[in-house]
Length: 446
Image (cartoon, rainbow, N blue to C red):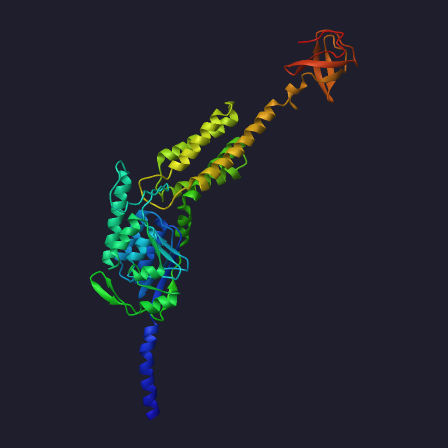
């Protein structure tokens, strides 16, 4: 009986521990730009974590930034989540830049890996222009960019409201937007930007255990120590759209699509270039539904490509080529310059210029080859028979037959030519060769 009682007592001690270890935590990873596909993944994962009964959702984050609209959707989902969201900037060396700063501050628990960085949340245009930070004296320069100032004020108020909701450093959050300040993990903890530094996911769960967070109107204590981690993978649909949301990928697909269709039109029946070009254009059009774009820029790109193609068929002495290249570069630079703030950009020197240069070289080589071919004498066809030398197979008085390059032709000579004499072709009309004697002693012609 003593042994039985001891066993029951030990079982009672073990059961709570087993129950505690039975807790699960959902985890997702975002590595790259913030776009609608990533927003859909995060929002869907919050719902899945709730439906699975997970005690929390860990969002491992490493991002250079992204679309403000997508960031707003993510932040709204986290602030209204029914399950605690732990934002963990990892691995070592990771960024929570720009849009990542908003998302990190919105987390119920915010943590960073050693060597990671947070900040530089100043809004920029989709084309990559970064409005100048506010002067330290707080005075605005006359004639400044009104839209940039408006966007800056809005995003500053947005990040301040997030920091106030999570009781984090509001002053630093505003400075991250207005002055693009960035700090490392230890400084972020010191300034109450994040809660703590964690070396890995296990340490994150251990340090977060016991913290009390607010979910709507209620407070919840976290039980994450030793919890089982269930990773929620990104769906194939979202992975494809996340890749397509890169402006550089969109530009490449667009140019490849136009090139494929051009090759197909020039060489009907090849099929493969046409099919690949159509698929590339469909993917590019799909991507343009994900990220905002400028119609003027897109039309300039199309006009530029049209002028470059026209140069191959029209002798403009390089005028169409120069105009087409200028329109192509200008349009590619403008196509993603829209009022929407974002860190997704199409860099001119790293993306626009190399593609334009490659296209210019290819079309220059094509134009040179076509021009050279047109300047060469004919090597085949009826036109090539003129001035050719042959032999009279019969007396030409004035009609008969001649042999030219091993072929028999009906011939007509203005002056008689005897059989076996060499002849020279002076014209071809209705598949009849007009010839004259080769020695020039007789006059012949058409």
